[in-house]
Length: 402
Image 1: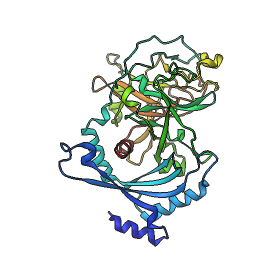
Image 2: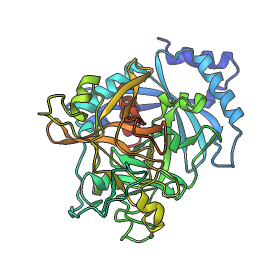
Image 3: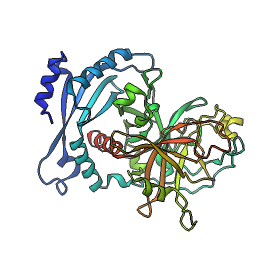
Image 4: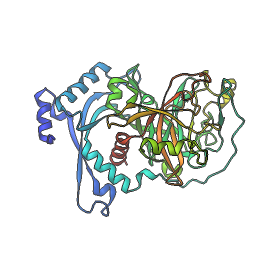
């Protein structure tokens, strides 16, 4: 593997200024404590400054940034030896290419697991158990119900990103200020621009701007992170990302754990057994955009229910098939049968039975092959699976931006 000095030499050889790249040391002893890291240990990721990001209609052209990215990747020639992520500082508008060697990322992930980062936290907020509202059927097969128990854990750690009749996404707190979501919710590959004016509202219940609808507030993002290959290809195998918030709502709401599981183990958690004596329990809760034909009937007929959470009360999110290939060699995605529509993008497929009782995210809602599906479309929704490369992203950016 190249040393950092050789990397800088390669950059200079193709005309890239060394000042455009900086190593950001991460003190593992400071992050994880002396019990896990008894001796001083540092890892360093390279942050290559690419210029000003295109935020909405404002900023550098996508072609300029694309040229910068390709220049760095060709100069480093380390596509198999490192993770590459895009990072956007939402305060300054600066865009970076972040490079972390995979061996360092694997070591960091191992420390994060030993520290229990993947197990979640219930938070300090009190819980209020409430019944769900009247069912809203769509196209005769929609089993989702509008939910009013959004101040109970883990529901209060699930939230909406922006949101409107024809827009919006969902996301999940996986740290005190870290929101896991879909990359396409952060960067529009078609428009080649980053999302602007982002607000994350955990446990949202309606459209008002008071605590009645936003019991845990509306939180501004300070950083976006996605795989570089989502930025350059738009391939849904890379449709995962993270938001770092300015505030720390997770201390109150709590956050979910997360796990990368082998295919058969994942089926054990999510599927009913053929013999019927064991039932998996995987769920999805998201914030549908009520202006689309596949939205729940209730909110299509009455837009007052826009910005409420809906969850399939009929189907556990069982798995149809695994498909696609991630850079880590795992299948990148799986299909599921639970009812989902636009606006659910970025929300979690999760269980409340991980290691018997913990809440853990197994996947991120990404795609749908049909909107108003037929009876023959048993598994119409595509989920970006949590795989080791996703764990590496979560571990690094939680450590870098605690």
